[in-house]
View 1 (cartoon, rainbow, N blue to C red):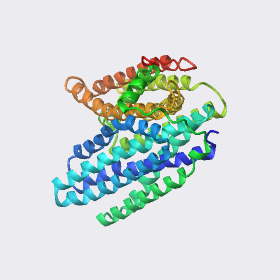
View 2: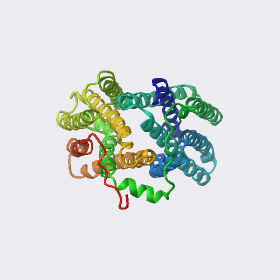
View 3: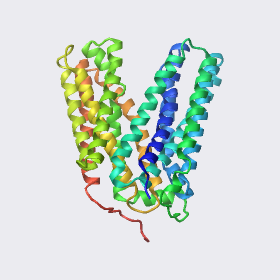
View 4: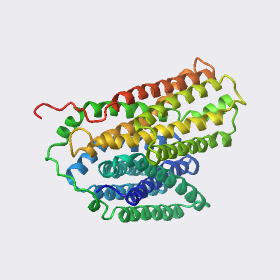
Length: 426
């Protein structure tokens, strides 16, 4: 048996809980550090980067869920660690007001715990989806789980923002405890008995983690897809820190107008994800490979358009172009996740979690690397070029990464069956 639609939705609730807790640490606590505590913006930025960096442990969590036989235990345990990290990070805000050193020490520990929790829970969740979702449902499963994560982020950010006024440390802790307990409780209920309704996995031969990773890395498709994930996600996140400054400096957007671009882009992502879910699963139109390539090519085209609009300055249709970029980002992202589920089951058996962990680590590293690289390149380019040309150069470079990712997708997903290069002795 494979996962029913109800079971896929239940696992989507877990993804929603992940997003609900993480957004507290990347948005609410970020604002409190910068505004209420008047700390430099680089401090919460580095803490968020730490939580991404810690997720380099994702392959280890995937390997443990492969060999342990019970992925739901890692999903629930990781959610518990994530929740505890969020509570400690929130308490660190209170400590920071009294002692910077003690508060930062607690924050570093808390954000490291958040990274570990996201890695353990998120990797095991994706591995369970990869092993137990019918091939014809993977695009829809990816759409459902990611849209529910976006919903969790949006709803939590909106509700917490409304409830947190007027701010007080006591109110912050009550809200965070409520969100964390609700998320962990919902995760326990959503995953209860879900693995008993799917075909049991054979237990893999016990082996050291490094040996297991070496076997996965020996598979050509796994290596190529890792590079694809890193390139595409670097391109995906490279504009994250520079799009709003671009709108303000080149197009004379007000702070409110430039902030709204994020909502416009996420709206485009939502539509793109829904389209792929309906077309690929509901109507059977197009392979996941074709949707991935179309999303990468479309993203590259829109980035070139955004770069060219800078020559027009104020009055150019930047909002429409950003919505188009979000749309193609959503197309490529959800199709890539669906493809990831399929590729996770190719090659050596009982190593789906390890593969998902490897690709999750590549995504996490790319998220931090892409944003910082984009900002760095813009700063360097603005020293010698006008603002419009400096930003355009980075957007064009980003488009080139999407083109390279499309080429890799064409190569790594060109075969209908596994074609792994196995380690000696098999």
